[in-house]
Image (tube, rainbow, N blue to C red; front, side, top):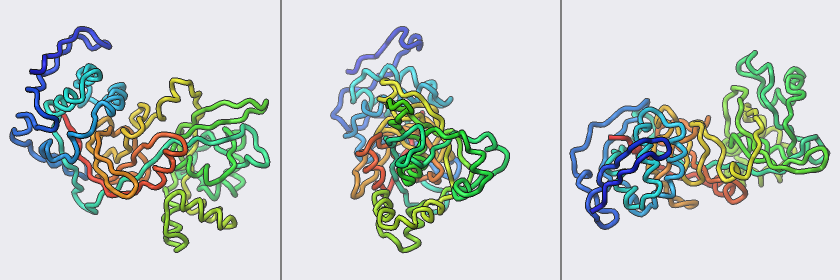
Length: 370
């Protein structure tokens, strides 16, 4: 038999006891709780949550839940009201075995399959990451593409100036003068950084010293987001609209780069944050307000899945085969709809390669407290 876990004061939680996890059983064997009557379906925004058995979750018994527990602990730093009451138990189970964690989920949570109320039934998974880029604090011949803090006049008009106007209109250029954080060498890297929403810069200071800082999302110009990859596809210019494919097209068509960039009127402004050795071990903060965990954090449509919700994600394709527990901790302008998610792959070149090519079918189940 599993023992009752009764623990005194821990992390300010007070006295907490977890329910028995049930008798020892082979991994993947459903406890008696999985045989109980299913609750009714729920509606969340424009999505239907259809209750299912734990046994209906593909690969649930094979995923090591402790890998996702760090992300779950992060969500418990800023939990919503629904999950706050479970956070003391989640913290205690950080030192539990995979079997204890899995059985606790079966006891405490109910899986619901996500279905759109209307519109396309096909799900889509893409990826995003935190770029690491070389930069200069001052403009040079090589580093001439500026990254900006929000202008003081940002709230004076909505939407603010488009990307093309920011580069060509005297009024927009004047409003951004003195708001430069630093400069990149490649305008496509600046666009990619804005699409990802955050990144790390190895920035050269005026005295020649270098340090690594993080740029975090601060604001946008409120213009609509337009995919440059879709623009290229509509032009018949490429067949591969992944980020590597976009950069290959740009290298072959340098005179059309502005045309490509201006097809997306949206621009993002940043704030600079120091990056300590401790902070460097975590991703940027997502929309939930907690640091993202590579491979275990996703961006979602918050009208379909509340922030902090554990989600069972299944996606198989040429780039990755994913059957895993993830946490809904972020959102994005392009992440709209019930079966739509952006998978945080981490930081650096390898994470960027995976994120740039990830575009596959998607199925999602939310794990909601009983």
